[in-house]
Image (cartoon, rainbow, N blue to C red; front, top):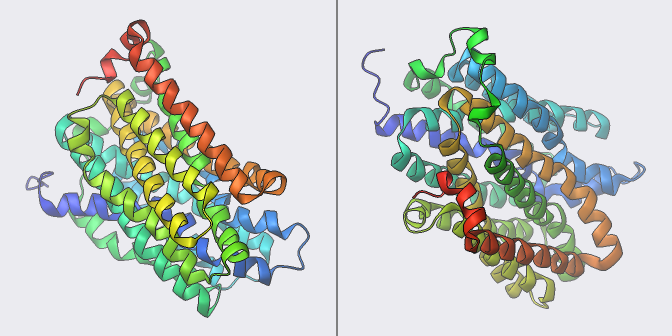
Length: 402
């Protein structure tokens, strides 16, 4: 395809359009969780199992992210992307007809494996197609697109959940509409294809900045661990404390996504003025302030304000981590590095409901948000300390170039 133009609007539109698949495992059904719990109320420990319906994809994304990274560097991005989009829609929509909570959980495992392949493929294509400046802009736009679609999906899910808890599972069929455009408008690039297995394996760990990569992975783990406190617990908190419907819960969650979209849109501008570690400090500070407001809120309006401020913080973390890691690893291991980032991302998501449910049982929902705020404040202080220490800063100097 000699006429392939990676800078064309249609290529960028497809890459950005498929990116929101990453939020569908949670956003598509989060407002329906209380109704799903009511339906399966006779199942022992249903309060735990129903929350796992939301986050079960994370455990297989943990595995799938690693597998996707290996497959991408061997067979290419496009084939894996097409296959996983089809599988994600198939497994996601199975909730429309399943009456067993066990089978529903199994379908979520398949969904997780598929989403891991899809999102790793898309992010790797963006990294492969574009130079540093364009990559920063597109990764900010990618996060904006993800968050913007989340606003729509959460609102739609809340409305559908008020009709029937099964209806939001229809949302998983939407990505199929992008398949023809993926097939027609995307193309592998020469640097994406690893010609021999020997060449793939013979990548020295010495070429990978392990400390920097480890910090990036840790940031995304913490990000998702604390972020998922909200989609997992907030609908229950709002129903018990403010007596609101699923559609209102969906609106509240969409406020978080909307502010994420707004700040991500300006990520390229922000990155041109701050280094990666500065952005971490800003992001953790904003998210900590937002969670503190939710912890002390006595009215729904204050919770909405807290969600908006939290979204401003969390909206910076994802594009920051993705861009950071693509700039510190070699192109030949980029797929695996991004697969590892996906794994860290979803380990945090998977562990979140277990820890936050225990925290809610011990100190209540407001106390749990207060604890999360304290953790975010400590992370912000740590980031500031790193940036202010010249010896430690030197270690990250390669990745701090704007």
